[in-house]
Image (cartoon, rainbow, N blue to C red):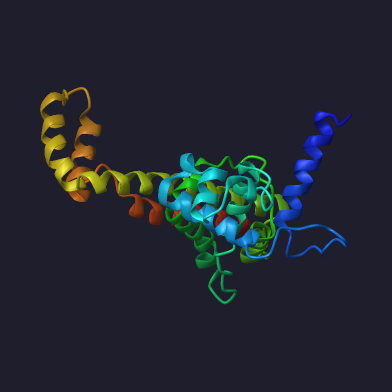
Length: 252
């Protein structure tokens, strides 16, 4: 009788085989999906649905409906929603082009963060996928290889190189979350209109003596940006500061 461990191993094997399907040789005599549709097409449909409706609406049934199929027929291509999400995350990473090797090192490092941020803004549902224990596919491994190549030789050991990539990725992810929230709010009410209402009200009710610095700086920021914050400007400042710190650490 199969155990839970056996089933988990079988599921993990199936997902890895799907992820690396283009690199693995076909198994002799293996039965595959019927012609007319590919795993790539199913994954593309999943990405399109998540981009359009959000990850909460992503189901095997919904993807099958978009493809004009019955839900059961889709399980021939992907065994579960979990497997589909893993494939979608890797497929999105495949769109990330290599970082040009002829760029100055500082620009290459900024590009590491900028491309992660751009990917998340283009596909906000990625923020709902846990980054912990993500199964690595060829596209994400290829991107990680390129990120490491971008900082190879600047004086960091292997652990520090990985940490530098992680810090740049984490910063980009946090800023992307703010930028996505700002874009969603602006779609309902412009930041300028929001600030024109809330700025004067806050100044009236907030005791100035209790918050002298927050009141002064907050008012300056609000009047300058006509918004609660400036995600794009914060990213440019933050990533430059991070990169300069990493480079200084490497040089030291």
